Image (cartoon, rainbow, N blue to C red; front, side):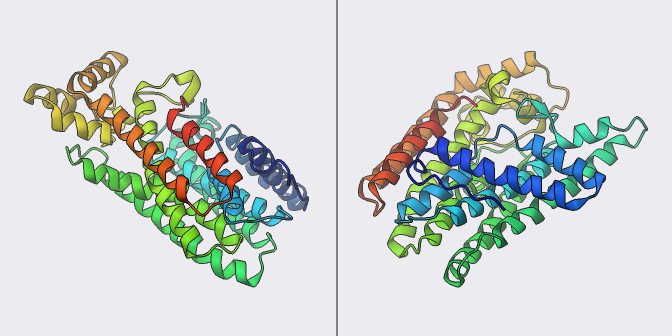
Length: 355
């Protein structure tokens, strides 16, 4: 097991990402070498290729949480824990693509589409889905392997494991709420924000910060400040994701901007348009959103209604409000100065991104 220590550079999100990627690469190399099984080597290769190109925001935030709480010295443990979060995220994304019936992820075919393409017989789709479920399960198991080989002290284990358990429960709940709401379009903006909070704000921002901070022995005020910063930023992150799902450039996002509309995702953008729209506009939205055969012409009509009702502008304002709220927390948060600087930079990147 290799170690990767970059003490003077770790506060840079780019440097943290490089270090976490190196941990993941070494781990998968070890699995490939130690297995002695050609079949497992194929699974490792598929998972390795799937994980290329991710933003690594969760492991970066775990590292920043550790730094915010005064963590210093050998970074080996926090980097390995951070890598375990990214491996868990690979599991979540592989299964999410199945649930959403997505064709692409990060500009490449999704895992279940790749596996289905390996078979030319009639049940190829079922084979692809089954194989992808298993590969996601493997990533889940390997996220635990990374965690349990991170040389946690007994105090760190006692602090981190309950948070990790909460994170896993929360993201599963968020996914369930999202799945239940898909195809059931409503103008209940608060309901969409509840989904965002569990599926993204807590999973993507709050819990990774908590986990990193807990590794450094954070006290209650530090963890509370993590929450106060994370929840508005996480909601803003998801709201930006919702906009990119409809307006993003495919070459930048790596996924179709028809997927969410065809699936009937009940996002805050959709709920805002339904609430503000006329009877005729609401009828058109309910007719078009959720149509599996929706084409770009129909999508343009939907986008025009989002503009006409002010829904897109409303969501942009919500993003900006939450971004500013997160920044205000950093003004008084009991974090190290370097961590505050890095978190401010990450906040801007997360809310103004184009992919």
